[in-house]
Amino acid sequence: MREFNHDNVNSFLGACLTAPNICVCFSYCAKASVYRVIQNTDIQLDMSFKSSLIMDLVNGLNFLHDSSIVQHGNLTSNTCMVDSRWVLKVSGYGLAPFRTQEIAQLKDRDEEEYYNAFLWTAPELLRKPDSIALRGTQKGDVYSLGIILQEILFQRKPYFATEDLSAKEIVSRVHKVERPYFRPLIPRDEKDTAHFVNIMLQCWEEEPTDRPSIPTLRRIIKAVNPMKGNVVDAMIKRLEKYASNLEELVQSKTEELIIEKQKTDRLLYRMLPPMVADALKMGHPVQPETFKSVTIYFSDIVEFTSLAARSSAAQVITILNDLYTLFDSTIMTFKVYKVETIGDAYMVVSGAPDRCKDHAVQIANMSLALLESVTHTFNIEHYPDKPLELRIGLHSGPCVAGVVGKTMPRYCLFGDTVNTASRMESSGAALKIHISQETKNLLAESGNFITEERGLQDVKGKGQVRTFWLIGSSQTIP
Image (cartoon, rainbow, N blue to C red):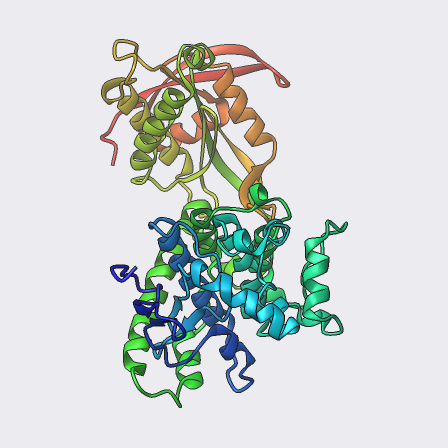
């Protein structure tokens, strides 16, 4: 234990095993325990600071669960310490052999304090003898983490909404299999804590197997970490009376804020158009927008179903990932927006969300570039001799675009233009670009493309439609 070295694990210094002076010693933390911090009404923690403490706690637990200790076994807000830089450090680990006798003595000496010690204990452990329960489990640690989340999020002691109940009564009700399960009550007006409340509810599930692991929680909390507003200024105002090491704290938190914000923005801009993402971040509604003229691209892989049937699931994913990685890098040089991928289908638009007059030219040049890259540079790893055949369809016309959904918002296109572009693709041919009369007319205005009439085609939902093949460009693709 003395060799443990982690920013969020309090260093174990030593122990005295000689009765009656049995004790353990960990590094001193100036701000005491999380329990003391949340009981101090002079300290008001904003959401960004709370999330920082929570992230520290999960990082510390993640280290312990990967170590020879395996689990903490006594995780409470009293064993989570805060140092002078306001970094949370998990303490009190590896002490199950010491606690057995201590708890037994406490039960005889002070019943209320004895049950207070079990407010963070998982129900399945409460149903076991103390000697077993005190050793704990990893899933038991996750439950304890859920109770500590309640304390940090609302800056109140455990089960603060049931103050009329004694600690013995609370532990007894958690021990029982009540329906619904007895857990701390959650205030309904805490909008800023919604993501963490969902995490908290998962942590204190009745069945241990239903609780997420610490690595899973770590990924989830990183994803919902609310790095908004001027976090540094808020921390400076709050910590003015703690001047020592303030510059180091500000610098580290500022760097963390910048890095996390950059990561968040990069990910968000990959999922949504920048102007749409910025509006959503500011809490503004995104109204549907009508575009008078856009060009839409659809493509899919010929005989993909047959190829997938002869490949493993991992091989199918590898094919699509390699193909779409190639596509994504190719389309970056054109004024286009990738709308979505569904299976082997790839959808791109030009003229929305950024309006441009030459949208047909942009999509045509992009289509030729994609067809060229698939024909000459792409190989299927496990079928190197089998060429991948792409089928492409284009159509131009009006459409409506908007954001759909809240849990996973998507920027979607609607209208007959979308349907017709899809029909151009499905009624096309392998390694060819099938275009409508409308797209052909727009390309003819530029005079830079070679097309060939295909003739009248029976298009589903459209009847007889005159269509064309896009053969190539008479000038170099930019």
